[in-house]
Image 1 (cartoon, rainbow, N blue to C red):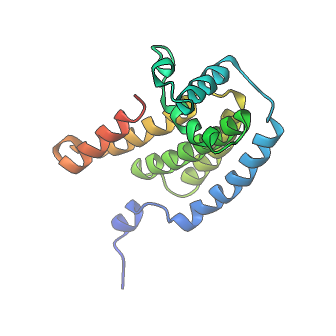
Image 2: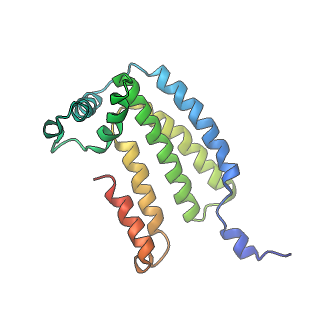
Length: 177
């Protein structure tokens, strides 16, 4: 059976090749989180305090016009489970790095990057996401991943004409709020 080169060229790269990037990212994220386990920034204190207020049932005091609740919502269940605050922040930041890398893979596929360019981009974003996950504790990396997912949905022309795609795009844009 002969495959049409145009069809083969437009296929997204198989997951089995990208899986190696994620297989490296996860242990390196664990090591980096351990190495930077005591790194703290003012934003981290604010997000941890908001998450603690949610856990304590003080939702009225957790609402802020300055701090987005998404990162705190992700931290709250871990704090409720008894995980120490800084470890909680590192786990959520590692999760943010994984989401960011998944979003990069998605947008690279939708942008039809293939071969070496695809893998170079994925490996580059892998190491950058690890660095960004330990630099500061903020929702920026998570937000970047969610925005990339939204842009990936918008890459095909006429995305707004397909109700399912438009709905998914709206979900991705709505999450960060």
